[in-house]
Amino acid sequence: MNGEAGTAQRISGEDLETQEAAIREAGTFVAEVRNELAKRIVGQHALLDRVLMSLLTGGHILLEGVPGLAKTLTVSPLAEALHTTFRRIQ
Image (cartoon, rainbow, N blue to C red; front, side, top):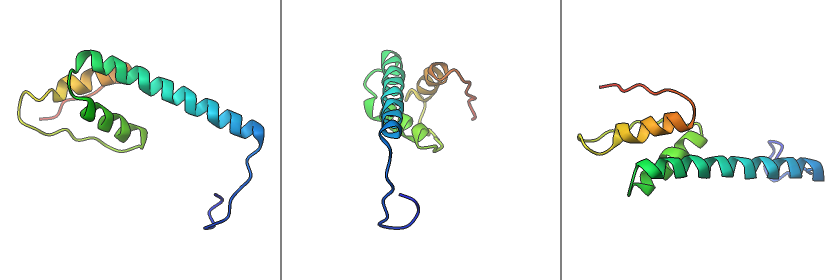
């Protein structure tokens, strides 16, 4: 879309192939990150999906809860998988 409601923009075959390749690459990356996290965080599939969705859409994440819910255990391997750091704030 070019900004006007109801007006479609044509995409060339090369552009479409480039976009499809980028989507496949991103999907592979997300699957790899999710698999890495699932190795260390058992039984929290919904949490992992929501954390990854938030990151992919440019959102922020605030994990709150009582002690023992694997909040730090979730974020630490995520930071490792994304080659970044995290800080714990109390």
